[in-house]
Image 1 (cartoon, one colour):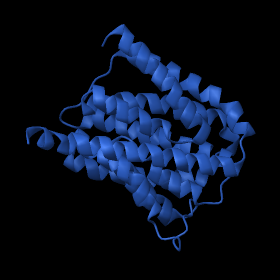
Image 2 (cartoon, one colour; image 1 turned 90 degrees about the horizontal axis):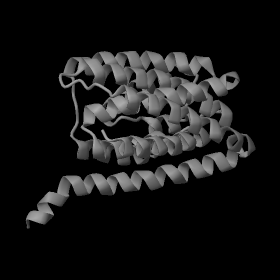
Image 3 (cartoon, rainbow, N blue to C red; image 1 turned 90 degrees about the vertical axis):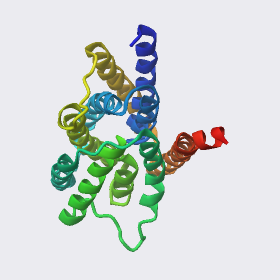
Image 4 (cartoon, helix red, strand yellow; image 1 turned 180 degrees about the vertical axis):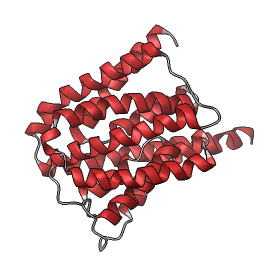
Length: 252
């Protein structure tokens, strides 16, 4: 990979980590979409995992006083079950399918009946969401939109959402790194220079977002987070549809 491309990816990682540091979401959704366009899927997943572990780990550290540990513990139960299930199949989706799933996930999450109010402290709900979110992550690279719906539906303030979700995401992306870096048949490796740039850029973007999150109200946080996720999701639906159906239109 050229130095220019590594530098460009570094700037993108700063920007996406800034978004995630601000809203606790969206940055990873943008980054994986870009990585899937320039790298083979397993390599994109490994690089994304390294980047997101650094970004979320630093975010969790900065907001450590606001972490709700019970939801983290029950979420990890579901993650472990999902890794066991996916390790049996070693499934790796095609890029168009992964992009379409990325796009449709937020809308699927919003279709959850309002009568079923998410309760992040509930053992059964937390384990179920952990299993589904981890399954989505192993197919698409992210599970943020569904996890966002889970935490936004609970009685959490913006700092608790950001801190608790970041802690869960560190574990989720570690599982993804293990899966795509060692378990699947076409396991990927990673350029150490690119990995170092990814870690540094992610920590910088997360740090830059901290003061803005401090000044933001909970209402502003939820409003802008939902708008951002919807915009990104629509783009991925369009892009994935073009990759899937575009060749047929070109031939005709």
